[in-house]
Image 1 (cartoon, protein in one colour):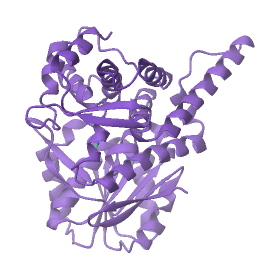
Image 2 (image 1 turned 60 degrees about the vertical axis):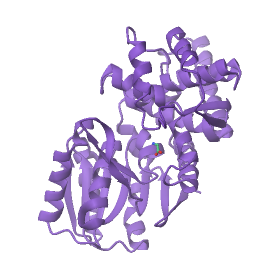
Image 3 (image 1 turned 180 degrees about the vertical axis):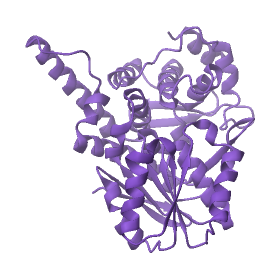
Image 4 (image 1 turned 45 degrees about the vertical axis):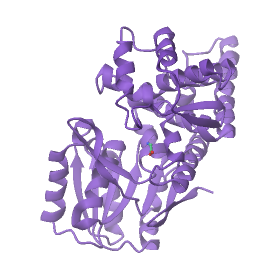
Length: 383
Ligand code: GLY
């Protein structure tokens, strides 16, 4: 079944994860009685590929559709860009019964989501994620935000969408590097809550290694292929794995919408991941690439504390590598600066870092009593 349901304080909403799911958007809008004008805000890079066809399709179904291209990149999560969205919406006569469609990755979803949350005190919002990262994470759970010069996502709101449509066919437009980066969050979801997902990710990767070995013995192999590359040509398998990763997010945010408890487990790998992004400078590493290193560091800390054994650390590392992700710190990066940056993590409480640490594949605990000296030793020792 490809439809998942998030339970939110404002009511539940469906999450559709399927190959070519966007073709079903008109019928979903009708079923949810979203009948006003549709305000389609999209990543400018998606203009010809998805935005225009979507506008034409919705227009042909009788909807009034207005469009706005958001420049690609994190710098669009700004006050200026938010104001331009307000100009477009208010200047164009937006009404309360209207719906904003956010088509793109996390930047578009966060920015347009916050515009929908705040204009006229809230209009309808539909998330249409087109990256693996936004499908399995940002588009589900109602977090919307822009950045402040003092930090990422510091101004925003919890604002659940009315609908999420994740069309896994759109992942074909990602660069191989972006595609690999997205698997870090999928693997994270396996480790925090779904051992069967983790096992299947391993099985898929192992299947590919077998195929490679066979073709090598037939001397027809052309270079190394990561599991993420093979999955992009395997639409059913891709949709299945993405759906199961999304389900982890759906279950976690349904249990803890406003991050009072369990939702923090989604932060696994992000304390050091975010710190690496801060120290390396935004845009140097993709978010998923930094998270992959953070996952390895967090698991290594867990093993050092005695929460898990090193087999878990190695299994997770092997899986990250199989999906094309590095686990080594960037060459020459200032590790003391990374340790310092972890103290500015949004999840720090009373100056204590709340670490999300695995005890087994599929299970994590939150600990705020990990000795800084132990963390420092691990961060300095890791390759
Ligand atoms: N990205 C983490 C969360 O949605 O809570």
